[in-house]
Length: 403
Image (cartoon, rainbow, N blue to C red; front, top):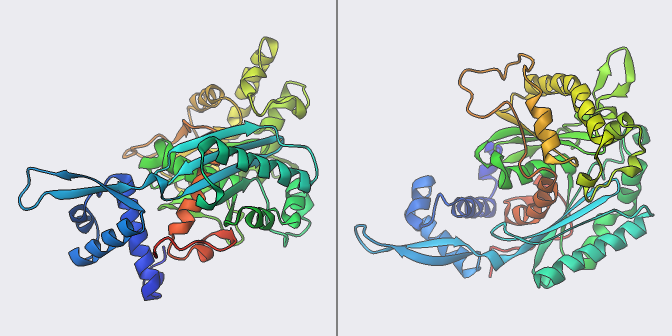
């Protein structure tokens, strides 16, 4: 958060303080008013007022009291799981995944299925059906939704010059169709749009080993290859929201048509094993490779490691992350094997004697990180001090800080 924003208005500052206190309670660092006062520069009275408002708005619940200390027993709190819900949708070629989260970030329902190969109206119908199914599975009425998070390789940016050269036509069609507006109208809640790698970085920050890391890069190897930059609990998107397109890096300055994701991707793997990309099972990739195909997939890992090693050196030298996490549509053991074979890595500014986290690691929640991150987005956005200016949101964000 830029320092100049802290004094924008009293309303902004109040929302910022409430969000910060909620984050402290959610993380377990502050279970009581006294804890929150120690972690902030706020006065005890201000913290007490915030706790009262959060409890009155059913965003937090009193749990028990801490005994054995001086004075009155201290009342402890936790976030209220039923305060609100978010649904995350991860769209990729031939793949649709949905996750429903409660306010405590517990998964209430999950579904994964092939994405219909139809027109935007058919995709909308399938998404609508999936959302309704998740609501039925969890027993949550649509009015309790704080919003939907929609993550895909590329849904926005109609101002690109010759965008068909940079983005699959399907995402351009969905954007022109206004799928975010139509979903917002259908469910009466805001839609938060995000690049899939950025959503994956949010998911990794909440649900994976990256929750202990302030600055990291998240790389997703799907039908393409993208990277999300997570910096000080926020996403860096670049001037037009397209930062992290590592898949577009050219492999050689003498061949601008051969880019990284032509090899480092599901499509690259399927080309390597001489099978059409439509043969890849995005719902259950574990059934794909057996016998000779399994051996050839292992050969692909060996072949792609030098390119991945070079790509990671570019990321490290440009962004200087504490760690890089890799996730994929492919099975986690394949990514773990890929990471293990990266040694020795290229010497970069990330080669440090004081390193705490590995330079590169497989994201333990793998491709689930994108749908989970997308589901967390509406919960995060609703609490933000200035959500419309920080996120791509369609539809009004509800005010959860007022009775």
